[in-house]
Length: 123
Image (cartoon, rainbow, N blue to C red; front, side, top):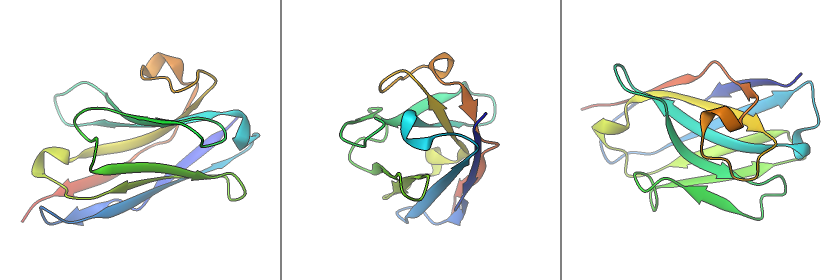
């Protein structure tokens, strides 16, 4: 079993930046592709970004491409999401997930989920 714990969320002004972290334990982190999703109140869960086991390939949703960057450090069992140029519509609970599908974009392709961290973009 893999446990995932997100951190780094908070309140930020429009145009600001945050870096989210997701620390994994209880499994072989480098065996899993990782993804970031978000869910805003009243909306469906949205795929944001994925990264392969080695970190050699990444994918992004159009809504965050050019603003968000995913990365991972397998030595630290951690995946990151650097978020720049944040907008009020980025407000949501952000979750990381681990799965075996390479660069999966669907929630069903991930086996393990963190509890999420709240990101609020507001002036």
